[in-house]
Amino acid sequence: MFLSALFVSLFTFVQFNCENLFDCQHDSLKNDVEFLPDGSYHWTPFRYWRKLNRVGQTIVSCGERNGEVETLAEQDCSISEEAVANWHLPDMVALCEVENDSVMRDLTSFRLINSRAVRIAPIRGMSPTRDLLYASGLIISGDTLHVIVAHLPSRRGGEQHSRPFRRVVAEKICAIADSVRAVSADAKIIVAGDFNDYTTSESVRMVCASGFTDVSAKAVGQNGARATYKYRGEWRSLDHILVSTSMMPAVRSCRVHDARFLLVEDEKYGGVQPRRNYLGPRWRDGFSDHLPLVAEFALDE
Image (cartoon, rainbow, N blue to C red; front, side, top):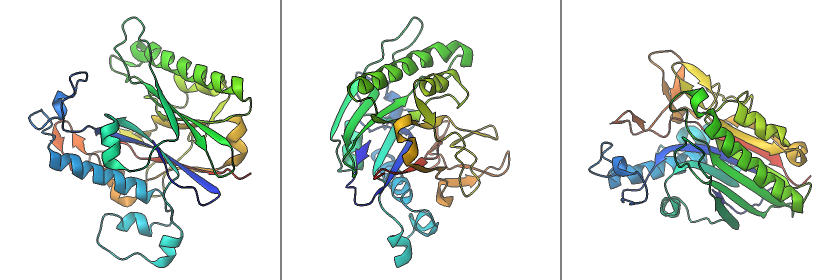
C-alpha cells in the first residue's frame, strides 16, 4: 500500500489483488519455490518485471473513468488533453498477494507515513496466515486516515472447514478498529482486502457489525464485470472496501475497475473475465485473476 501527494479534495482509494506477485529470489522463511526460475511456474526475471509493469498499468488506469486513458494505457498511442485533465494518480492503493517489501520498492518509489504488521496467532488446525497491515497518515482535510489491509485465509478444505480461520482474522480486524476508536471515537477507518468471503459471509458481517459498511457490496464495472472475481462463470466479489460510520458521509462512489485491457472473453461461460497472469502452471502474460475496486471520497467535508 502506498500514498501519493494529495492535490485534490476527491480522495481515490484502490484495492487490488495482484495474483501472486513474487520476486525471483528464494526466501527460506517462505514457501516460494514455485515462483523461482527453476520452479513449476518458471518465474523468470523477465516475467517478474513484466508483471510489475502490468500492475503499474492497472493502478495508473484506475485514476481515470471515461475510458480513453485506460484503453490506451498499454499501447503506444496518444491520449487527449481532456482525458489527461480528468485523470489523477489514485491517492492510496491497498495491494494483496505481494510477497515482500522488496517487490514494493521495485513497483513504486512512494512510501507510507506510518505502518505496522499485525500477526495472526493460528488456532487449532489453522496454518500460519498472512499478517494484517495497519497504516495511518494525514489526508488533505487535515484528518488522520486509518487503513487496515487484510488477505484472509483461503477456502481450502471447504467453506465450512475454513470459516473459523477467517473468523479469527475478522476478530483481529475488529480489535484493531476498537483500539483506534479508543483514542479517537470518530476515527476515519478503511478496511480493505481479499476476504475470500462474500458480503453475506460471516467474516464480512462481523466487521460490518463492529461499525463498518461494505461500500463495495454492489460495485460493478462498466465493461461487463459484475464483481471483482469470476469462478465457473459466476461473478462474485471476494474483495471488499469497508468504511467506518464516520466516513460514510464522504463516500461518493465505489466501482469495479474493468478496463477493457484487463479483460478477455470467457469462451466457456460467455461474457468476459479477468485477464489473469497464470492459468494453472501456464503463463498467460496477463494482469490478475481479480479486478481492482475503486472507491472515491470527498474528504474535505
